[in-house]
Length: 344
Image (cartoon, rainbow, N blue to C red; front, side, top):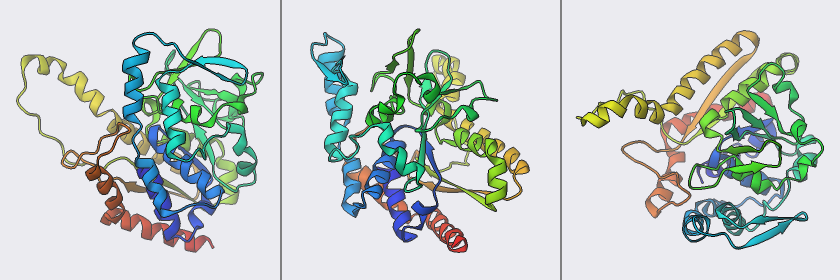
């Protein structure tokens, strides 16, 4: 809901110039679903303010119900797609509910967006689910991304891997689910390879899409040098940046033993943030222009939590809607207008 609202609001405030200037969209989990929904409605010229409510509709309950009565017992229903049959599990139900909530506008294949991306009517997407087998990243796009894999063994190009299997026929909502398959809530996705490759939520590797973005800039830096004077990275983030060091409460002996591991897990996204800032610093030295990162943060913190579980209550929805009014977000909005005006 937040990523859709942020893009809708910022594009309205810049009178449509924001979408005209975005080259690449990437990220993880529900954030990419919101971006995909916004991009599709923009392509159809059907954006309306009321559509943000669609992103706040419940998907969790039917998904968990299917887990309880079907996935953990005996799966008995199948469906056919492109001449092949598959089990109806909670992944299937998740996509069904997503189509229902969004009036099926995302009922397309990956390749259905190819021409619009190629003609720059919409930004290109790079979607990067994590590979469970070896902890690498699967780079999925309408176009070959071997240039992002040449000097980086962590990346696997989807188009090259499935060159003989019509990769652009992949259902787009399945791709979005692959990128948002949070463990237990959604099943991991098995790819038709030998040996079997399984993928799940990309947030473990690159929650903010920064590794992909910076790698993309680094590999195309010569083109950027010749054709741009500045690169702006708009970060739509799922919470406020917390600079204050939290205080540890009194702990039991078990908590003291497990504390270091639990701390690393819960602070993992902060670790990513610091690593990404360091990578951006190094990349800036190789690019003669300026790289500017503009954060646009959801008003979520330990004091004002919002669940990230595909189910939002009324308070959480209102808190998300109010996030565009944060002073820091207003500052980002103002700076974005300045940059876009100077580019005209």
